[in-house]
Length: 248
Image 1: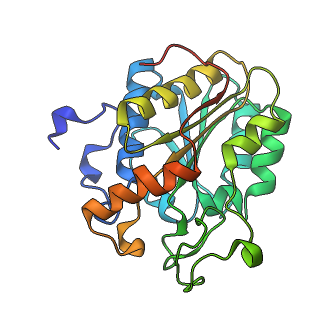
Image 2: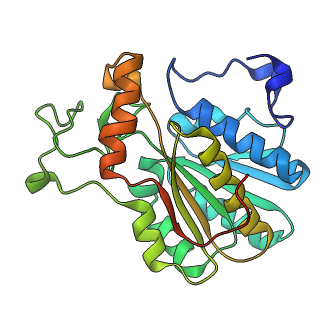
C-alpha cells in the first residue's frame, strides 16, 4: 500500500505493520483510521489497546495512545473519558480481552452507558499465545486446547458479544458486528460508533469478524471462506442497536 493511500492519522514510519501475514487487524485499523480522518477528530482521540495481538497497534496511529493490562482497556478509557469528556476514547481489544478476562468491565461499561467506543476483534482463538480456545471459538472448531473440536456440551457455546451488549445497554447506545470481508460496511459501522460518542448519545460497541491464518493453519482461500461462511453463519453481521449517524 502506498503511503498516499494510508489514513492521515497513521504513523507512516511504523508500516508495514507487525501482524502476521493475513491477519485481519490491519484491515480493522485501516477502517478505523479512515473513520477518524473523515470525522477530523485525530487531535481529540485517545486510543487504548489491550494485551494480546491488539497490543501491536500501540504505534499504529499518530494519536495519544495507552497500552493497558490484559482486559483493562475498557475501564482505562472510561476513566480518561470521565476526566476529559471532550476527548474521543477508543478501547481496542481482542475476544479474550473483552469476553474473558475483561468481560466484567465490558458489561459494566455498557450497563452504565459510558460514552466511549469499544472495538473488539473476534478471530475465534487466542492468537498471540498460540491459538488456544477462546470465548468465541466455534462449535467443533479445533484449537490448541480443544484438539478434538469445541464440544458445546462440555465447553459451552461461543459468546454472542454484541447481542449481550445490545440487551443490557440503554437507549442511545450503538451496537454492531462487522467483518473484514466487507470493508466499506465495517468502516461505516466504526464511523457511526465514533459519531455516537461525539454526539454524547451513549456506549458504542463494534465487534469485527477477523482472520487468524497462522493459528487456523489456513491458506488465503480457506481463511476467507472461514470468515465469510463459518463465522458469519454463527455470528450475524449487522447493526443491532442505534443508528449513530449516516454510514459512510
